[in-house]
Length: 367
Ligand code: 1CP
Image 1 (tube, helix red, strand yellow):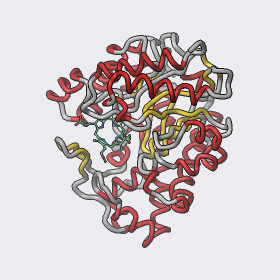
Image 2 (spheres, rainbow, N blue to C red; image 1 turned 45 degrees about the vertical axis):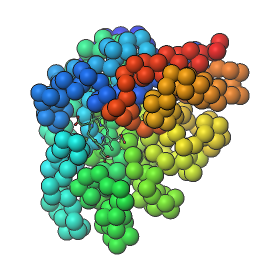
Image 3 (spheres, helix red, strand yellow; image 1 turned 180 degrees about the vertical axis):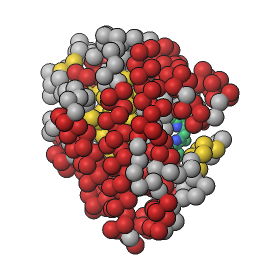
Image 4 (cartoon, rainbow, N blue to C red; image 1 turned 135 degrees about the vertical axis):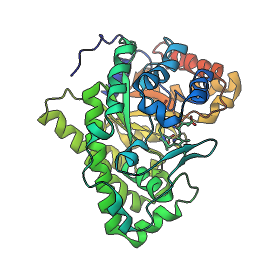
């Protein structure tokens, strides 16, 4: 493990361990991104995946929100994308202007799985992410912890078959229903890569890691249990085994299974994650009841709250902070504040600043 500057703010690590904290730590999903003019400026000069593959650029963009919101953000997240995993498995992924990710040759039938690499050497294929993490953690100078991440197997599987974003996931789901065994085999292969990828990120310096199952909300309870949950367990088990076998100091594991709200109890009991991200649809009180102290909760402001004006932002942050503190003597316990999904491109950065300030104020023990 490289030697890094001492950490000055460990609030998120304490909350992830389930401790009571003086206020809620906060970071924002997609905090380095298109709502920031400084990000758009770098993007004008560079292709999206070129930035991901250039550690100095990825580090610079990761640091942008930390710099702009100095003292207000409690974590950084490495600039990359979940779709670097399908690239590592041998697929071509492009980022089209205004359209988003595009796979020119998506998987059409299970026979196409043969086109994927049988063995994926993450150090060779994704070593640039590891380098970016090591550089970023050094440049962060201990201000806040650095989060690494991967897409969850189900979400990556869906992109690999749909070939990009989709409203219905009709193609990906037809695989689940028509070819359940082949689907499970492919999901497992993706999970194998995710395990190695997360271990590599942790060894490179990631201080927490998050698994994004952004499309969990599209699966029925049955199908989530059948196709997604086992691979999420495979990831947490695989990473925790590496902590032991390779003598790696353990880091908290975060799972964001968007919209899997009805199954939070099952996920908290079985999936093996320290922190569970929740979207804005479920009330904090209900989420806390379902999780029953088995994990820290992360969330869950509606991303559109950032369009709600200063008063709207303040009132809703206050309400949600109070809900998370309820029953704990007005103190924050095991809560990491965040949005319930990524920040959107049209947000005024000043409104995000206000939301961060409101979280500091209303999550504090004295508030
Ligand atoms: O043109 C551009 O500049 C591309 C915009 C962009 C950015 C800034 C994309 C394309 N990805 C990213 C960065 C990114 N993606 C991060 C960076 C770190 C940070 O959070 O600051 C992260 C964590 C992601 C993760 C990601 N990519 C997810 C999971 C999170 C989520 O929002 O659900 C998903 C689903 C993607 C796919 C993706 N990449 C980019 C877009 C526009 C999308 C979504 C496309 C779709 O709607 O299907």
